[in-house]
Length: 336
Image 1 (tube, rainbow, N blue to C red):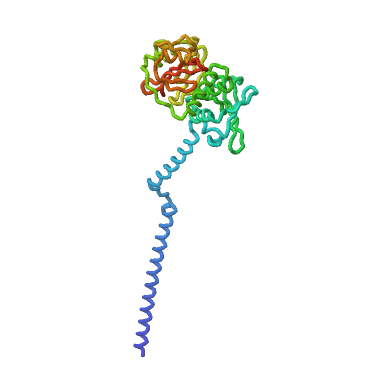
Image 2 (cartoon, rainbow, N blue to C red):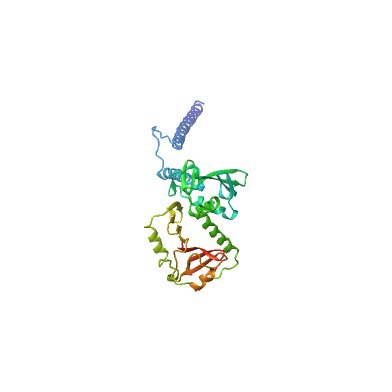
């Protein structure tokens, strides 16, 4: 009996020892797992167990900086557009009509010539074309009527051919110069020439097909023995009666329309002879009739009702504008 009781006691004690050992092992494993979880959580939170911040991977840091720089560059690129139109409070496609107001007179810019204003604004570089504001006496107010019924007023100065915006001024191109003189000062030298140029442009648009004429030798259309480039060099050495600046967006430079006392106007890529003191080797000059021109320059021009153009090489380089039956202007041109 005592032996059985002792055996049961030994078995019970052994079981308790085993249970105790298992309990201790379980507690140790739980502590290790808890410690591992703490380390993982600390790493995810960016805090090391010793209290120091871990260093982010270089790739992630570079990616964040690159994205921020790209966004800043895009925003700055939009804000720093060099072209005047991008800084105005309307879009080009919103414009339905344009009016010009000067000295109490309001005139609408013909629909077919609105592009002249908008194109100049689109390509006016605010650095390359910058100038000083001119006298208020020459200020014309351009009124842009928009599709949402808004009217935006924008100053243009006739005296120095400049747009004005936010207290600064920028030269317009030569086409705006001609348009505004033709509209506001139609009897001026530039205004009259603009009317002849515009008449010929409209005639060309209406003519279904323009026949390609045979060319002439450059010497036949030299004026006073000089071709275009030689006239350009000569005029650079002569004083002008007056000049008006314009911005040439094709080359990004400010140039000048100039009038000389010998009856010559110099425009962008055009030298215009306004009187009969200059002539070709065959005697073509201002004041001749169309019949007389045909006898003196036996060549085949491209004919419009008010303008004959003669081709030399690959380009039309010599032009005659007619006022009725007589030559009003003789023009040497330089292809772009």
